[in-house]
Length: 465
Image 1: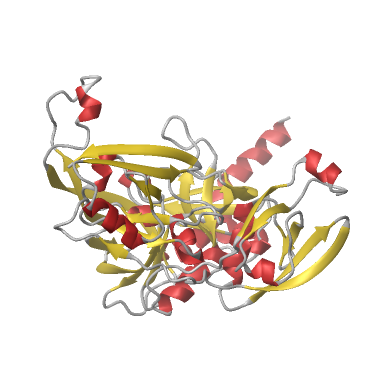
Image 2: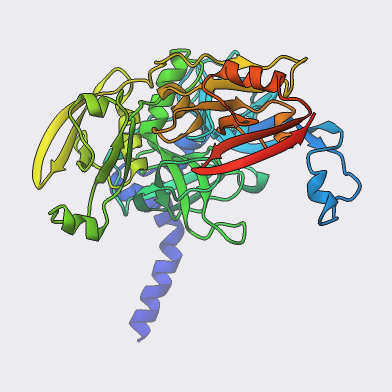
């Protein structure tokens, strides 16, 4: 016992010298050493993660009389003088090039009138949005006058596996740059994120809190695998279920932003489909309930041109499995417009493979878009005839053939008209072109009744002039 005690004393006395000469005091130089500490990794990656302060002007209506009245409150909902208010937002972003290309979330910088970006070393830059897309919740910024900045390399997110160690870097709750660690806990999470983002996500248990939006999700090599976008929570804090937009989609955004496109372009499928259920799998002779079964195809769809028919089951896009329509669209998007994707499918128990061109939604037939003038009924109302481009723009079913509302303008929402509504008739006058709406409103008299189709349901809207 005495010998053991003396040995312990000797080890304690030698600890300071050991700390100076051991690997514990050195910068890790191997994968095994990095697994013991994230410090070198954070030192390398953190300077490329920035804080973003954005301001936008929003319109809100002043409080009105009878606001809480169950009858008059709903009747006067759209009335009252609008006023402008400055709204501030805080988020994070990731520098992806030395010349100041930064990627963040659309909900952080979208519609902002003033964007200020602060680096980890306290340098500040003004920024402008090169490309933003609300549906994907991504935005690409350009820092003004930026050169020789630190940046993070992109990794192909298709190589990411469940169980990998990851770090989330951002500015949660506005307290300053913070790093949290975790693992990749799920892939191909579609329709799981909150907010406006839709599609395909990487799930992680690394803490992602408000303010982390737009920050980096990196692997143990310091490469970017995703942009943190949202959490699944009931309390407002992180419960270990966070979502990141995969780097493959991020790279498409950067590529299109550098090409100076005005809006993000995603390929048009022109099909309606749904996940294969166990009952469907048995009915179609499939071994497993996997893939997306096609139920309808637009005549101009590239899948129709490639020979697909309703009932075909799409299993793979470019060798990657797809089990929901969102996953299928994601795979088409990362393939890119102008390229071709190899589609693996099953028809009546037989597997086959077809190459499908990735195209933009065609503007055929012409949309014949009009905007009602200030001196007309419902001024500012923008109307168009449906074609594939309009259907994609308004996220409508491929079977809709009608005159639709592209923008409701400042007045039409007061009578209940919404973007995406298909106008069928006005005072029983059948509407077949945007000009028909103008003519019908001019001759409507004092009472006007609009029959519209909204979400597959027929709705009647009535008002007086």
